[in-house]
Length: 155
Image (cartoon, rainbow, N blue to C red; front, side):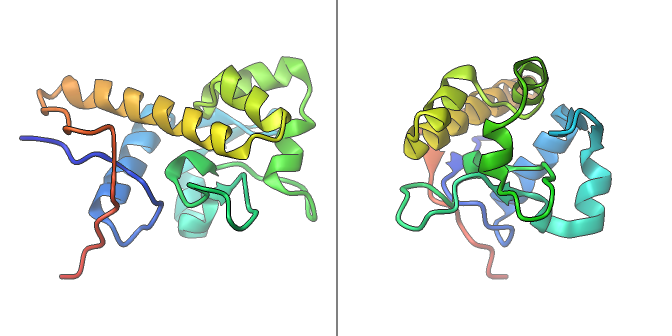
């Protein structure tokens, strides 16, 4: 069996995106929230559906803003964007939040320096590589390309 490439867009009408969500919930069932509390990702998803996956970069025109690499399951205080909250966390908490949400330090640095496209690209690649490792455990053949179009299920 050959895997489909990592989805380019986060669209829950796609079976490939739903498979990504299941993998992520399995690999990271609990993760640190921005206030240091533990987030039960499956419970959060069951309460708020896919709205739990919030965008870090929300500006229009940013290449790949709809990518799964731009989506995180984190809460913020009212009126505070996810981006603002990420950039304001303390260094000791940042270590845990970044690890729990698969945000490589280089992606975080890109975000801090205003390079939104690099943040998304670096995090997307990190997610895709980890997901591929998981699939390899089940002898699923890698997709020919790392990233690919998000096919929408129509049936």
